[in-house]
View (cartoon, rainbow, N blue to C red):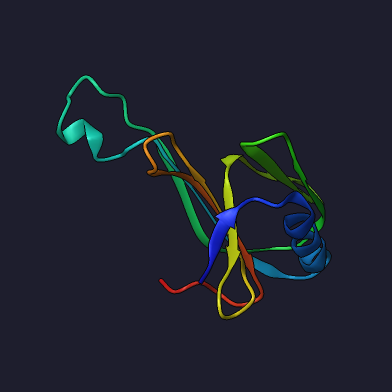
Length: 118
């Protein structure tokens, strides 16, 4: 898998290709969930959802970098902010990631027609 800095046209094309069909998403955020083990004053927060099956009407990538991606569902939104890199796996799934200044993963949004491994 090759991951590179986001090219908005390529990411938008992929987002469009998954619209109006059932897809699986992985959405994860973290600010260092394990950092509190080293500093008890550090407030740890994160969110994680894997293999949620959704269908979105349309999606959009916006920003100047880091980027935001929103997926419009019939009854709401899926939204990720702070995205910096993208790539595709061997199954054609879109992999978006946001890395902090220290290079660590802060946010991930992945979209594909097949479930992600557990």
